[in-house]
Length: 163
Image (cartoon, rainbow, N blue to C red; front, top):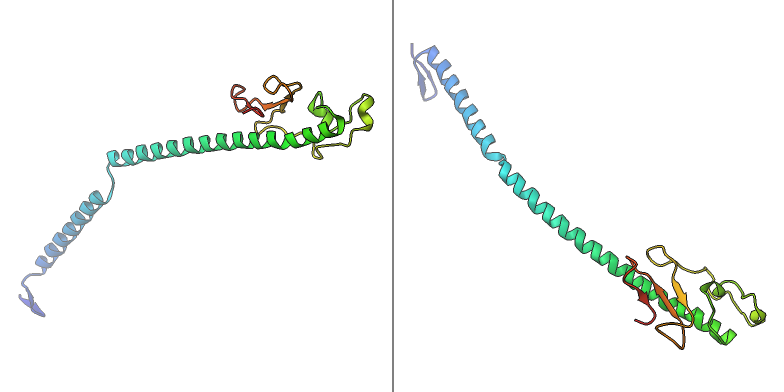
């Protein structure tokens, strides 16, 4: 029994069943091939991860160096800022203080009447690493004046007013 549908001619009903089965099989095979081609291999994924790790490590290193340099520059700037109150103290007292505390509290000696402080309204700052600035009068590096320094990020790289 031949049935004619449009210009396609089908001869048997069971022929339609095999055609649908073949079509489904072909579609499933093509879908499976697409899935296999669409994914990444393990080597490709690992290669991308290695590249990302390298890029992140370079970025962290650059950030750390920039942060340390910024802290060193801040310490240099603060040493320069503490210089001004020390010079003001010198002008009032005709001498540099024996410690940085004299910039905040009047000395306990007879020169107390000359003191016009506090010379640092907000108190003594800490260096960028949370340590107090070091002070010595008379200075070892500046014999006619004073030495003012920070011990730096590691206690070895000293940042002082003689640099």
